Length: 241
Image 1: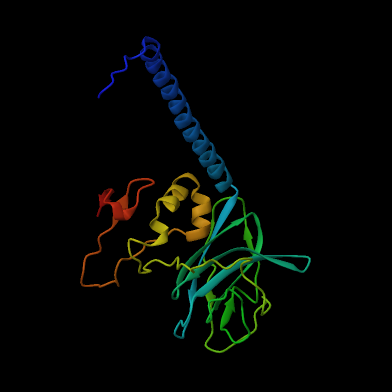
Image 2: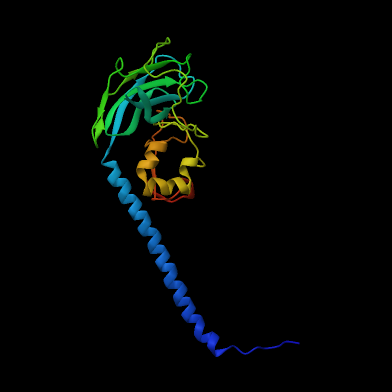
């Protein structure tokens, strides 16, 4: 047996009103979330005016048999503190983002990938060492370092940590690092981070060009640019060169 229940006139009258209320609430939430993101972006861009990028080149005459760590640190009354560090997979150019101040810069081959400068690891530093003055904003170029073939002491003490917490994976920030499209850096989360908080993204992953396969000089490189907050693997390419 089928029982038909007549629709309530009051219910029919209330449904459109409820939809309007929920619709207005949804629109408000969307605008609020976007507004918060814009505030974060504005704050991040304002902060970038106070930061300086130290740029240089690390030369290594030997085979790089581990992550090549480059770091800038301050020395205030004998207390040394890492301001920023980066990871390279081979000799090449590095970039460090630091606040206004004076810094020493060094590099070493982290054979056991523990982000600790150990006694038997090859290392080099800028100067003997020499202070690098970083103004508020801009770029400080030509901070070049040579890591010698034989072990030589540097000003950074052996056994000291480069980072308070070691990340699960050490990502190379050198151009030409080989990755695949499932790489964590291409996730939606980090895509959003790079768009809304670029300084935070740069300090974590750097700004570079990543390769899907080893460079072949006989082939023409193809460069693809994705839409903001999009993943390279989802096919949303805006520009291919």
